[in-house]
Image 1 (cartoon, rainbow, N blue to C red):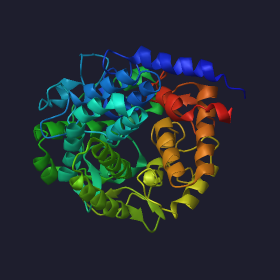
Image 2 (tube, rainbow, N blue to C red):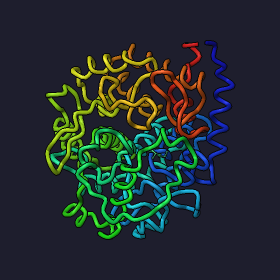
Image 3 (cartoon, helix red, strand yellow):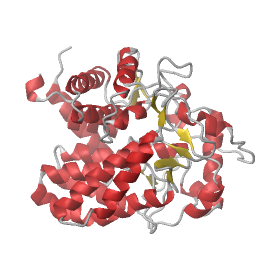
Length: 420
Ligand code: GLC
């Protein structure tokens, strides 16, 4: 199809501006009425394509919610919105300067900051210098509290950003959500319930929130008592990447980066513990039982983004991407659990494609990277700026006018002048 790039650029910029609430950007109005952590870092990348000062503000607002222990919450509840559940009253997480959730999300902010700094070193220097100690404190929080054999663990499926991925099924099944009580979901009043997590999952999500709340969101107590602790490829690969980017920022600023070097070595070793030989791929590993999830997910392919060579993953990637017209599916299409519509159990997500494509290109797999960029551009051009897409038909799913899909278009997917 012919693509009207100028029109799509305008639409993407309008989505970012339309979701801008002054200093922070909603993922999409209605379904997600607050500031989400990794969405915001992707939004910053999107703004950077046309309004660099606004891009820095996005990250600064995110860090204005940082907890004293370094944690940066996955949601900042800047202004109450009754259309969202679970809100601040359910989380009961009052350890930070802004009402928030009690868990974090994949740390992509340092990578956004590095890209922004390198795009304009003179204008970005002070902004990056302001963020550097905050990024360092957040990264240190992961290293202090979340490692299992060097891989990064999540304490709630929402922390991975891949809420209902089959990766967590085993660990979730071990939870009996006794006493969770009555509650009313809001997500299913905004979008088709078939595209969202099931009630069984949701009961456990809420039960885990209630438990974290009872433990006062104290990492030491949660480490001792949490029934859910899974070493996750999303967190591990993204943090490894983010550490390299933070080191580059530190070097540009003339900071001492020895501590970050140590973190990188630890995470490189930790990443290897996610290699499931039986599956022949990187996988999630339950830190409590030692069991692998036996899931090839789109996060498995973040190995290259993490800076690893991982040549053995190329054949897996080729098999998975050949199995559907609009890759990368969030779960293996050859698995019985694959569902092309249900959220993180099959659909394709633009942000994952962007990180996978970036990693492929950096590791020298240019043709694969370009094919993925092109298919992502087609998806957006044909089906709009949806939250995610059916990997078989390309049908848009979830929320519309989505911030991160607009950002993916502006920063990576849109054809450059030469490629048209
Ligand atoms: C969903 C996604 C998560 C995202 C959030 C806001 O919970 O799974 O990754 O950050 O929505 O878009």
